[in-house]
Amino acid sequence: MENRTGARLLWQKVMLLLLYVFLWFPIGYIVYLSFARNSVWPFPPEFTLDWYERLWIMSDFHVGLVNSIVIAVGTGIIAMVLSMMAAWGLMKYRFRFKGFYVSIFLLPMFIAHILIGVSTLMFNRNVLHIQANIYSAIVANATYSISFGLLIILAQLIRYNWQLDEVASVFGAKPWRSFIEVTLPTIWPALFGAFLVSFILSFNNFDVSFYNLGATPTLPTVTWGTLRHGIEPELYALSSLIIVFVLLVLAVLYFLIRFGWVRIGIPEK
Amino acid sequence: MMRSKGRDEGSWGQLLRNRRVRIGFFVLPATAYLFVFLILPMISILIFSFWKTERYVLIPDWNVQNYVHIFTQWAYIKFLMKSVGMALFVSAACLLYGYPVAYFIAKEGGQYRLLLLMLTATPFFTGTLLRIISMQHILGPIGLLNMFLMKVGLPPIQILMYTNLSSSIGFVYLWIPFMILAVYLSLLNFDFELLEVAKICGATPFRAFWEVTWPLNWVGTVAGIVMVFIPTLADNATPLFLGGMFGKLYGNILFNQFGESGTWAMGSAMGVVLFIVSFVVIGIFGKTINLRKMGYVGG
Image 1 (cartoon, helix red, strand yellow):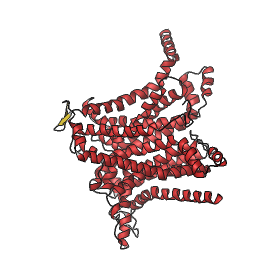
Image 2 (cartoon, each protein chain N blue to C red):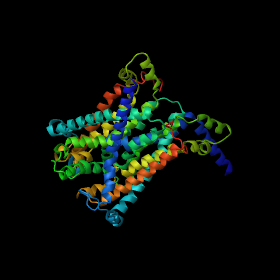
Image 3 (tube, rainbow over the protein chains, first blue to last red):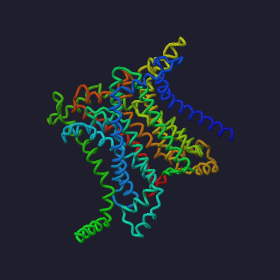
């Protein structure tokens, strides 16, 4: 019996390890390629920073970067505010048709991104007669971000102590003030998490943004355009920078949670 | 001046004290947002799917020609069936590999649980396009794998060069973090003591898992399947970069309707069909969920 449990554990450890290799190796290889002079068979390695230099002077990518950040910030703010309010309403009050509201909030999870992109494009163009622009891209990206944000904030609010709120109002605090002074200090990690996930998802989004951007370039659409003429090594440099950025953000987040500086809904036992 | 302002505030305060107004204040903005920016657009493509396109312009000429076209032309049905098959296969593969991994992290991870989980989730956040390109650099004709085989004098693995198999590896690569996350979150609230009880009562470990853990965490499993199935069914970039000429899927055809060919009405109809197919599949899985039986009483 003991032996079999040991074998099972070993087997699962091997599976986990193989999964990490599977998930991380291709990404690591891209980072490696970004420093390699020859990208087809870069062995033995001959290192260079040329691709980063080229990236530095290519203006397409700069415009794309700025636009991607604008979209990501806009989407993050809309998703954070709306999903916070929705989560608060769902958790604090008992009311009829709650299931109906929840299913509306989670609906975007069940619709493929390409359908969100296509349908919002058609709606804007043929019903509202709006030319696709960076704002329509923000609006469309916020739809699925609300679902992610809601789940993150709900996970935190499940552990929220509602009596804190009562106490504040007994002492005469207006709802707005009790939110700022009592609620916010305890739940800000979830709000930040909702913002961050929406930020990263919309920053990298292609399927939704592509249809809603019109002529506005973002990093994924510039990448897409470049890929039509085959891979250019600058893309490795760009990808590596994105990878490093995402890694840094999530590493910081991990250490903040791990050492208890912030607490999120998922309890760490 | 002061008095009228005070009175205004009073009526505002009174309004806000009304419970229904307060609930509406919190819940309605997101509802309205999704209604206007998601549900209305979805309804609009349903309407456009009954129109037709002439020279890149939509014309409100009601007909069902687009649907007739989709369901009588073998090509569309073939691509749709290929996509559904691919999505089911990828979901099954992610489940088969992802479940034991999620189980291990949740049960044995101890203080490293969060780290182990984040190591599986982080690649997802680097963006789908980037990840597909990186997979192409491993599996493609001039990818690392085949270049290595060539250098050591072996023939390349034909089955991994622009085939459905390499697309499916790419899909698993893209979406397995979702599966692990969903299963992990459902196992997080699972009381593993129940397993011990089952074993004490004489169940073999496998039977204890099959009759206790698996059904009690079915919600997470279904959530994982849905989160893998939906994006795989509609994806365009993965079959393009990994599937190649003969690995085209429904998403590629759909993508072209809104790109080069500019047949908006036809594209809308294809979108509606895609939406219906994904909802039917979700519905079938959703039917199997019985919250009461799984211990979510009242929720």
